[in-house]
Image (cartoon, rainbow, N blue to C red; front, side, top):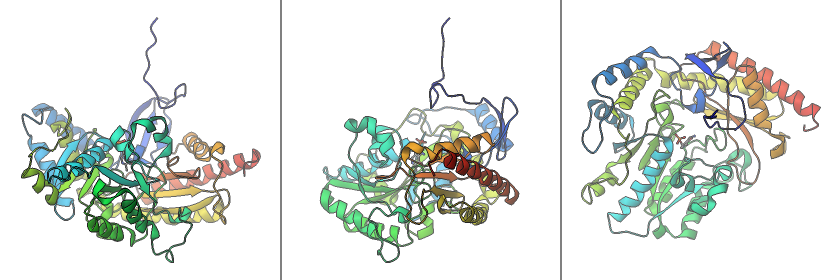
Length: 449
Ligand code: PMP
């Protein structure tokens, strides 16, 4: 008898079979309820089972589901591009559709290199990024990712792009303290540029708030202003990877709006479709598009499913739902409510070293010693333990580990759908409270803590 498999993230582990979802809740085949405290992978921004989205899918499918982008455009794709560009800051008026966040950042990389090539500048082919970052799993995107765990098997195939220190105040890589430090981590970009040579560098890429590799690390307010100035000084494009932070997650449509800094390229994904279809995009400024338009006229990227009308109709319906339900505002107020709760938990549990975030992208970092900020040993698997305890207790949280240079780093992201209510946040916090209590007992019993 032939044995066939769906390849699971961890081979040999049991994954419950999901039956359906509604709002912030998911239900497995055995009837167990889970609160989606992480919107899956910070994706399901409008919650599960929204009827209007299913209707939009049905309507578009009844007209046309697929056209190839080299042959046709579609009303849905045109409208979606217009909608996204309308929200984008500055002159970011052009939108290129892809299918995943990795493709969106990789397209950003290619567009940046092409921008210089079109002007006859063939040496600017590197992209500087930061240690403690994640920009995607494909080789170009991984080259830009300062995520040691995900890089190490493929280093021979990767460009060594990460160079600058991240603005990680809680565990400052420069062993300094804000605000006295003068935000030296931003100046570190300048040192990296000088070390590599500005004539080699096309762009600098950064997540506005570091997500998967560090747990909602928010930079100091001055950071991105300094970064923008440095990029301009050396004729280097600024790419904002808003795959996780974009589309309202942090209380603004794009997280860079928190600091009034306009990048040259923005990558989005995840919340753009809220998980109802695979869809992502690269948003490009007029400054860049004008050069390509008066040059080769072709953005040298693209996939079979790019600008898929079916997916575009879904994303339009998602944005429409967000607008009608004021989800950006809700993300801001509920995010603050959640941070207040988390700070109360911090008083209760000394292993909570740091609580941080913006809007509904909140992070909690766990440490062995809150005074010295000494992390747990990587072998203690503190994040894995907490994830599994929360899961058993019916709460989904997202691990943000493995991306930090020089120490293990145990962090989780809490990021429920943007239409979460106060009562639901209280329920999430109750389960988290109980779960951290169980974790503490477990760590003490095993002599780890
Ligand atoms: N950039 C960031 C900031 C991300 O958080 C992620 C996914 N966690 C990606 C890129 C890659 O997106 P995808 O998994 O859709 O390829």
